[in-house]
Image 1 (cartoon, rainbow, N blue to C red):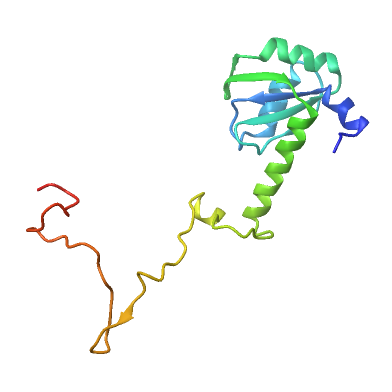
Image 2: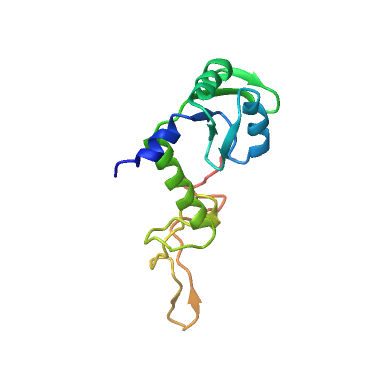
Length: 158
């Protein structure tokens, strides 16, 4: 999908800011970049970067020249370059999809769950389920013996 002419014009005024945390306060970026020129919009919530939109293209150029690879108070060293419409749209789509997953939006058909902090859930295994033994009680089979006299099966050397 091609970006609209309005989006292309807006991207000329927008810079990508790298090496910032996703939870950086937008006010901090607005005050930092506001020294260059009037800021129209600051978008955060991306993993390691943000977008800052200026009123003019000249201000965006000046921000790239003056702030790229500079150490900024309360932010550290940041990277600043011109944003592209494709990069911006991809980043917004991924951020929105991620935030929707955290809010309990539509579920995918895979094992990933944001509530597990990025870890995959194990599918339930039928081989480890409890099976009734001859006496009728339930037991679980074990594949290794971890006794002190076993040879080669110990996890820790003694």
